[in-house]
Length: 291
Image (cartoon, rainbow, N blue to C red; front, side, top):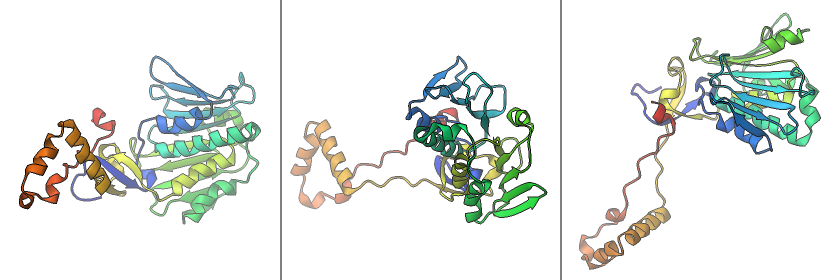
């Protein structure tokens, strides 16, 4: 990170150091675009469900529990979940969006593939990390992957697990984590045994992707900043066509007075740069209201 303090929108890489946007819309949108229905409670928690009530997602900023996101699948809409995925409040929103996008696509193609759980090998969930050069290790029945910088990882626990213990969060089949150790900087995401492997693979693919994430600078967890690659978002440069359109709009807004003055002015006093409007000030995101 540069020695000086950045302000405004920045690009952050790797993603696992970027922190959460604390905005639910990007992760909710893939489901809402596929006929899922949303409602909220008086505390602004949002609940999204499929038309048949078998797939449910909760965005729970006001929940007393730590997970900000909970996603569950139910073969029996009134029964206990068949599988559960959770993402805590520090998890980068892009990872939740990758999961919800894959979930929406799978639901639209074939509901049974979402409800019946794994028909794929765990290796499919590992592959994006392995292809990205993450270090693989093992201990007894546990498979471990660690990012090159040691600041993110995956733990997959083999063997037989107790289903109810998984749903309670006492045991984890899949556990993703990232960020420097600390309450506000490290995040965790977990998936129970029956979560379809393609949904996990979509999440690990985004986790391993080097594409930077867009953040407002103050939202990046402070402990993660020294290890992250952070650069400011450049101000947009108007194209010649945009300049001409802006000049024409400005002329019309003044009833043609600017145009008539330009025609009346001697050619030797004019300058191409004088016709250029000032570059508009860069818009800050909604996060500025919070800061």
